[in-house]
Image (cartoon, rainbow, N blue to C red; front, side, top):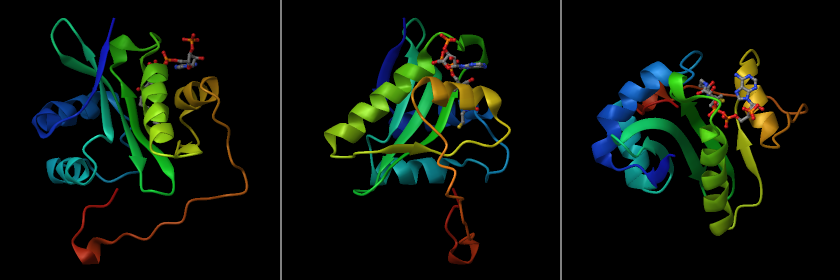
Length: 148
Ligand SMILES: CC(C)(COP(=O)(O)OP(=O)(O)OC[C@H]1O[C@@H](n2cnc3c(N)ncnc32)[C@H](O)[C@@H]1OP(=O)(O)O)[C@@H](O)C(=O)NCCC(=O)NCCS
């Protein structure tokens, strides 16, 4: 089937190529190698990959970010030709296992309002919309930091 492991800095070029074709790329800043490397330096186990064991190609990803307080899931993506095979479900399972091991109690994901297939995947895994909240943002470009 598929194998799962955490990403290393060596995966970054292939991962950026994978995200360019497989991930949700609207309404967000462009991915960059320094941003991913920064993540891996700060939290080396946060980025979980699904791989095809026959050729080690990346077929899925999720970032399971835990800051000591909240459990955030980002960049859930599956290769277009590998969808509906349970990869996203398995990635979320791995991410939630990490959160539990770290003491997290609730997992969340940001999903675009018009991304119906993603909503279906999150719904299938038990996630529900928290209607009373909305996301507030302010770009930190003046600080020279990458925006995510
Ligand atoms: C959303 C996405 C990650 C789902 O990946 P996946 O590996 O195909 O999902 P799974 O196979 O684990 O699906 C689990 C369940 O989710 C639901 N689901 C997943 N994709 C669906 C779709 N396109 N339409 C309807 N339901 C869907 C189904 O209930 C499915 O179970 P089933 O196949 O037994 O019916 C994938 O479509 C993707 O990469 N999309 C582009 C990137 C994206 O939008 N990411 C999410 C950002 S929040």
